[in-house]
Image (cartoon, rainbow, N blue to C red):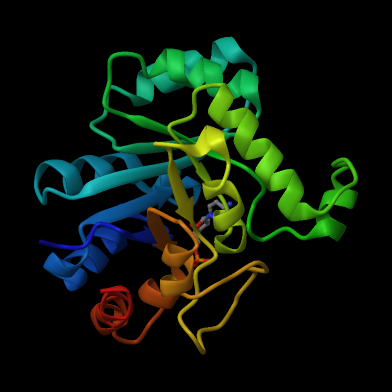
Amino acid sequence: MPDDRLIVAIDLPNALEGLQLAERLGEAVSFYKIGLGMLTGGGLALANELKQDHGKRIFLDMKLFDIGATIESAVRGLAQFDLDFLTVHGDPHVVRAAKEGAAGKELKILAVTILTSLDRADLDAGLMKAGDLPDLVAERAARAFEAGADGVIASPQEAAMIRALPEAAGRLIVTPGVRPAGAALGDQKRVATPAQALENGADHIVVGRPVWAAADPAAAARAILAEIS
Ligand code: C5P
């Protein structure tokens, strides 16, 4: 059984390169994240192909944010595709509308708390209220759960705090910002290793560059799977 706790982010420019990566990774990886960078490069077509022809699970990372009516219709449209996870921003009005749009479908709505690439200085620049970043993440997670989110996206450093929330019972925690020991951080600031992220209460870890940018992506994925097994 492939271990679907590992989600590989395919942050490549087009579907062809994404498919080539998935073919190189083969059976080892069963869950893929497709994001905004591939939207104009056939991302939805790739999502369909990986699902229908290769039996993979799909996380569409759109991080939607808009007025409720627009979110609801966007999610209703996306829910026509056979997707597993979809992200929206964690603001309660957005989460509620997304759940309406996904009604009757298997699609799980995951709420973004605070991007793992941001630190307190970035929040100041974005006029986000004062307070320690982990506390704000926990507060946003609790509100997203109250609004009906099936799960949240958070940094592995905040996963334990979220797991401890009463509102988090039975909900998913998905953590990007995961770096095997020694891997380059890139723009990520609040990181942990795959094993630490799972120990902290994550249900799934999302790993991008350490896999797709590796000289041997299959070996990189296998090393992560070995670390968490
Ligand atoms: O390459 P890397 O492992 O940093 O990729 C992480 C992936 O997770 C990227 O696709 C990024 O857009 C996504 N992500 C994130 N932080 C969030 C939500 C999603 O890094 N809060």
